[in-house]
Amino acid sequence: VDDDPNEGGRLVGRIVETEAYQEDDPASHSFRGPTERNAVMFGPAGYVYVYFTYGMHQCMNVVTGRAGEGSAVLLRAVEPIEGLDAMAARRGSADPRLLCSGPARLAQAFGIDRGEDGIELSETSGLWLTQGLPVRDHDVVVGTRVGIRRGIDRPWRFRVRGSAYVSPGKGAAATRREATPDRPRPR
DNA sequence: TCCCCGATTAACT
DNA sequence: GTTAATCGGGGAG
Image (cartoon, rainbow, N blue to C red; front, side, top):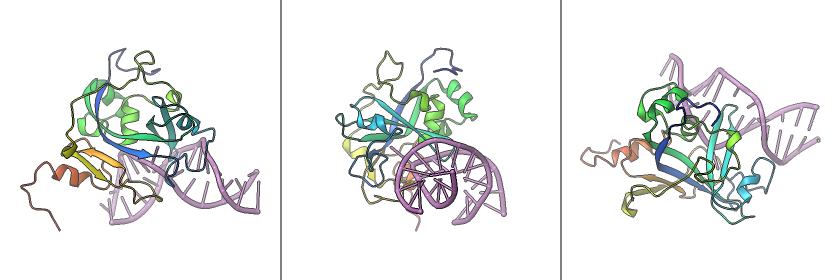
C-alpha cells in the first residue's frame, strides 16, 4: 500500500459480514455483462474487485466464480485484530467498532482503493485470506442484502451471530441483539 | 454528450 | 429519521 501509517506492519481482521453477488442477479455490477469497471469480476476466483461509489467510497470484493462467470463476495464488515492504530489513522476514529464495520470503512481502514483492483489474493501481493476462528453454521445469520434497489429478496447476506463489528445497515442491531437473547425484543 | 443514480457514510434534527 | 457530500458508470439520445 502506498500510504502506509503502519510502516510495513500487518493489518489483520476477521471477516464477520459478507454479501454474495452473481451474474444472474439484478443487484450485481456483473448483471449487464462485462465492462471496463467490473472486468475483474469475470476473471478467475481469488482476485480482488474494488469499485468506487457515491463519489467517495471504495468497496472490496473477492471474486469467487470461474473465469467468465461474473460473481463475487462483498466484504461488508471485519473485526479488527491487528494494526488498529494504523486503521484508526486512516479512518480518523479510534473506536474499534467504527474502524471496519461497513464495506467502505473496512476498505479505508486497510488502505484499499481502485489501485488494488485486480490484484491476486496471496502473500506475494500482500493481501490474502487465511482460515480463522471457525464459525458454527448455527452462528451464521443469513439475511437479505442492504443498500441495493433490485434483487433485495435474495438471502445472500451473511454475518456472525452476536458480533459487535457488523455494519450498521438493516439488521445490525438485530445481530447484536442475538448476543443477548435475555433482553426482550422491542416492538 | 447528457443525465440520473448508486453494493455508503457521517452529520444533522 | 433525514439528508448532504461528491463523481464515475452506463444507459439514453
